[in-house]
Length: 123
Image (cartoon, rainbow, N blue to C red; front, side):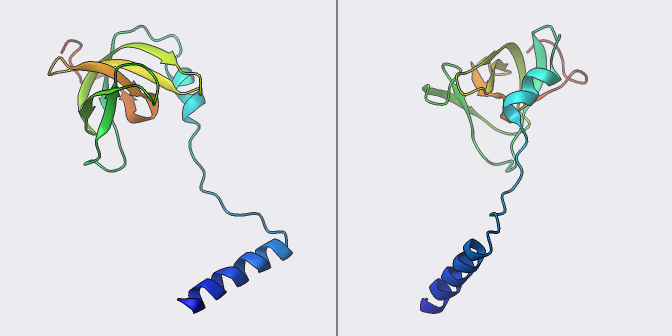
């Protein structure tokens, strides 16, 4: 354990001394992309929930913000109809969605794939 801590400290000191910037993973700009991708699209439109881990629960909220009450949960590949899109104060897009079960709520845009074909227009 002491060896790991010493090795990590040495790496941090060396990186700082050499002025090497930390490596950060690139993230897609979800705040900008969801508005640009669907510019001019008329709602309602079909969509599908998405997640990197197909078993992860996706929160469906009462309001379009991350602190709103979680009314339902969804999973990747759940089919929905998006009826509205808004941007929150943090710049994220949110979609008002309705599931086949008739459950409704708001899902953040980075958990949505908007599909223009192959999904029935009414749920």
